[in-house]
Length: 150
Image (tube, rainbow, N blue to C red):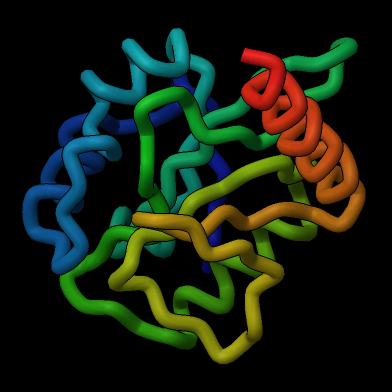
C-alpha cells in the first residue's frame, strides 16, 4: 500500500536506509540534495514501512502545487532493494491520481507495464501530463527562437 508523507512526517533514518540499500542508488534522491535543490519542498511516497520510496519534489504556481524536478536533478523515481514492476505501477498510479505533474523523472532502473507519456532526452525521461505538454513545447520553441537571435 502506498502512503503519502509530508516533509515533516518523513522518518529520515528509514528513508536513508532504504536509499542506501536500493538497487537504484542516486545521489539526487538523498535528503541533503533534495533539501538544497528544492528548498525542502518535497514529499515522500512510501510502500509499506519504507520497503520502497519515491521522493516527490514540487513547486507552487499560482498557489497550485505542481510536481516538478528541481534544477540539476536528472533522475528520481522509485527506490527499493530490487525493481518490482507491480510496485512501480502502484507508485505511478498513486502519483498520477494525487498530483498535478509537470515534470517527474524516473530513474533508468524503474520498469513499468504501462507505457509512460514520456519524452526521451539525452540522459533521462521527462514524464509530463498532457495539460503541460503544450506549455513545454512552446517554451522550447521560445528558447530556440532566442538562441537563433544570438
